[in-house]
Every structure is written in C-alpha cells, then in structure tokens.
Amino acid sequence: MAKQRNMGETQRRSDNLVLVGYFLSRCSDFSDGKKSKPPPDLNVATWNDAYDLFFIQLSEGRPSQPFRHSLKGTRDIFDSLFENGRKGWSEGQKRGQELSLRDTRIHERWASRSDDELFDAVKAFIVKPEKVRKPDWTRDELLIVLDYHLKHRDFDPRPNSPEITELVERVAKVGDVLGISKQDTPLRSAEAIAMKLRNFSAHDQQYTANGRKGLQNGSALEAELWNCFSERVDEVSRLATRIVEASSSLVASEAIADDVEFEASEGRVLTRLHLSRERKRSLVERKKKSVLKRTGQLVCEICGFDFEKTYGERGKGFIECHHTYPVSSLSGKSKTKLSDLALVCSNCHRMIHVQRPWWSVGELKAVLQSSRNVSR
Ligand SMILES: [Zn+2]
Ligand SMILES: [Zn+2]
Image 1 (tube, rainbow, N blue to C red):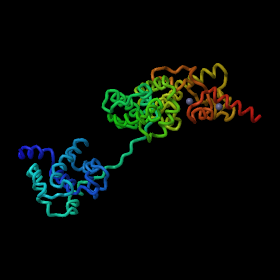
Image 2: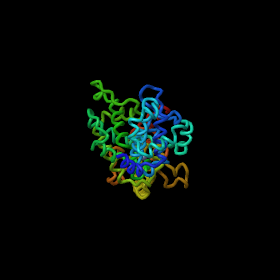
Image 3: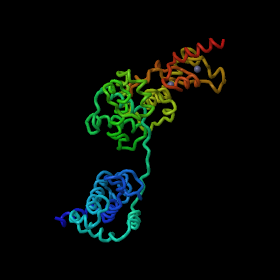
Image 4: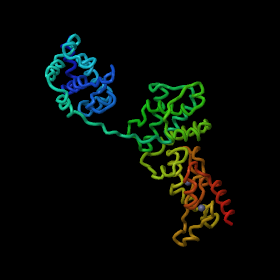
C-alpha cells in the first residue's frame, strides 16, 4: 500500500516539493489557538498565499489550484508528525506510518536540524508573486452587470451558474475591445462578477428591504451608475445590448485615445463608436461639402463661429462634426446619415463632451444663448 502510493507520488511531487511541504508542516504557526497558520518566516496571512510563494519554482506547469492542492496534501501528510503544536516524531508515530518511504527519509534527514536551517533550505524556492493589479472596472463592464442585476433583483446567482458564465462572456467582449484584457483570458472571473452583482445588491432597496445586505465596500463608480441608471431599467437593457454588439463590431486596434478623456455616461465602447463616426473622414468631407453647397459657408451651428472669417486662408474649410444621435441608441450596425452630423467649432464640440452626461447641440446652444443675454 505504502509502496503504491510512493510510486504515484514520485510522479506528482518532486523532492523539493516534498521538502517544502515538510517545512510548511513543521514550522506552522500554532501560537493562535488550534488553527495553524503559515510559518511566520514566510510573512503571509493565508495558507494559499504560502503555497503561491512556491508556485513559480515548483509548479512544473500545473495550474495554480492543483498546485495548491498538491502542496497542501504534502503538508497534511507531515502534519501527522507535528499536529497540535509539534508533538514530535514519537507521538506522531501512529499516523506516521501513513508516510511514504521518501517522506520518512526527509523527516529523518531533517529531524535533528533547526527550523532556521530548514527555512534556509526552502528559501531558494520562493518567488514572491508580483502583485498585479487588475485594471479598474470600466463603466461598460459594470453596465452589463448592472443590467443583469436589474432584471434579477432578488436573486444572487452562484459563480458556477450558467447565468454567470454567460455574463463572463459578455463582459469579456468589452475587455477585449478596450484592450484591457489579454487575449483569450477573460479579465473578470465568475467570482468577480458575482461579487459585483452583490455590490449592486447593496445599493438596491428592493434587495435590502428584508434585511439582506448585499456586499458593501463597492466602488464609487458603482454608486454613480446606480444613482444614474437604476431607475432606467429598459435603457440599461438596451445599452448593455448595444455595448456588447458594438464591442464585437469595433476592432480592438482602432484605439481612440480620447475615449477615456471624453467617456460618456454610457461607457467607453459607445464613446469610441461615437467618436469614430463623427471623425470618419469621408463622411465629414461629404457633410462639409453639402453644407457649403447649400449655404456658402461653414459655421458652428451652436455659436456661429466661422474659422475662415477669423483665421483667414488657414481656417478655410475647417470645422468639426458632432454626431447628434443619442449615444445610448448608437448601434454597431446602423449607418451614419449626413443629417446625423452637426457642424460645430472645436470649443463647442469640446463643451458637449467635456462632462457626463454629454449635452445635446440644443442644450449647449441654450446655455450659450442665456449667458450671452446676461453679458449683454
Ligand atoms: Zn461653436
Ligand atoms: Zn461629438
């Protein structure tokens, strides 16, 4: 029996891994009641953190979860020797017979040596995993999750449910097109998405009414989205659909730097779609041509600014276009008509986009008009 296990173990566990398991078991911290904690020398809070320190050196291509299991299993085997605060070899002997030959040899080799020496021996296998901070959640991703929450307000799906699996895929499309996730690896795990759902639950009085709490400590952006959108269930639903659709139709490489600076309430994907529409050269040229032909000039539809009049030859033919269609209604499939575009000067255009929610041409015009009346 012992021999059989020994053969299997040899394949799965290297000598070094067994040594580390031995160290973890023997040098466990029992100072705090019955539950053992990782050796203080490792300076980590949880056992998983302890296992992860050895992952890079000893995992031999295994994914992190099976590696943790393997190291925990090794530690468990030796725990029969050191249980309840280092009983020592003789007390552990009963269960010590579960040890394989190799495990026993390691113990015999190290039994008379100090913990410090042991730690020195395993130190070589430690590589501190870099704390890689994931990019913050985008509006787009959160809107997709919010949409789900608003449709299932009383229900916390488990991370391994089909609903969450589908959400992971929808959210991953956004990560891909915005270039914040690595190809083929969804940035947001099922657990992370389930957690976000519970963050939204915490804002939701319908959910918290009967004493449930949801998950506190959500981000400021979640609170902002909740305040802005929670009453607009249908709009959020349309928006989420459009974001996912548009993510599929946009090409990740079409990065537009301004999509962060000018981000609309509706998120970066639709912002990018908006900016790409109103900057499409051929379309802008056609728009300017048609207005010039009809009116003989290119002036801002909001403030009347005329680049050629002000800057002479240099300003001739210059003006920007703003796409007037509501961002929330933009779809990746629809075509832009010339009548969707408004001619605007650079100042007015920036003022439309400078804050959330974006203003319409009419709204900005009204503000400009009233301030002109005041200063008159
Ligand atoms: Zn203007
Ligand atoms: Zn615009």
